[in-house]
Image (cartoon, rainbow over the protein chains, first blue to last red):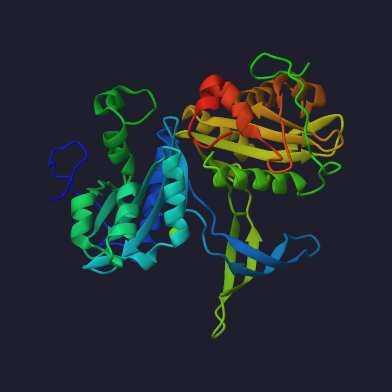
Length: 201
Length: 201
Ligand SMILES: [Mg+2]
Ligand SMILES: [Mg+2]
């Protein structure tokens, strides 16, 4: 069973025109959504830059500084955060190519600790996972992600677990991963949302 | 006159043991403070990684991927954001070597737009500026920063403007830039703060 945040089993369908994500498709979809939210004053959410350690920089005359040696660092936080109606919002997003399950190792233990830390600050925190083979994108509240990680005794989240614990995220061409719809229904009064003046339609 | 957020003219002094910041000292002090907040479950605030455009990556056998060509990008947001008591918190931090004023050009127009955008989301947004010659570090609410930027007809914030519009940030060795003290007094009930169970002492 798929849980919908408002209790209704509304038949939300994803209007993706693509045949399902590969590689960075989810990230690019979320960027499109975040840009759409920003343009409409709905929310301000950005992807954090990739953390790197810079070792060597050249400063050629009359041109831009050029980094010639740098390494990727392990992320100590999730990739996305921002502001929505005064609240702090934080999430990690991942694609999953398997039909069976999403492995724990797709998340860094640092990211789990980070989600725990922001939950203590009453953050709106969650995971977005797209099962590319089904073209389904789920929103799962961070507390459930952490609980299963710590207490299930397994090493992956089964696909069925997402159906039980997650919410299918609706999308459209201009707003492919409309996660704010889920946030609204979990954290805000949906009626109030419809009448709000924050530009969200 | 220096404004203190609670209306009192308390004689807050900075306990910096250093003789005043140079270069990255403010950033390192803020990192220390943020680490202290994190350890005490006070707040979760991180500096965003430097945004870069990666052009070329080598994948040597049996060792880590090495970035061999990359360039710095202009930041489209401020450097710091995070969660505090459910609220979204956002700021930019800069040192100022001049005794007279802090030039507009130390901030990117993108950063001003970003502060405007997060204010629409009811963010707790501000600027931290350290006058290194005086070893004074100011908290200035973002709305005042934006208003002066847009309406003053000048190209810098005079030192006296910080005394009028800003709040001197207290600090100690373990917590050099204790900006949460100002946030508490501007946004939360100070009495409640003292009795809160969020680990803040
Ligand atoms: Mg990531
Ligand atoms: Mg900066």
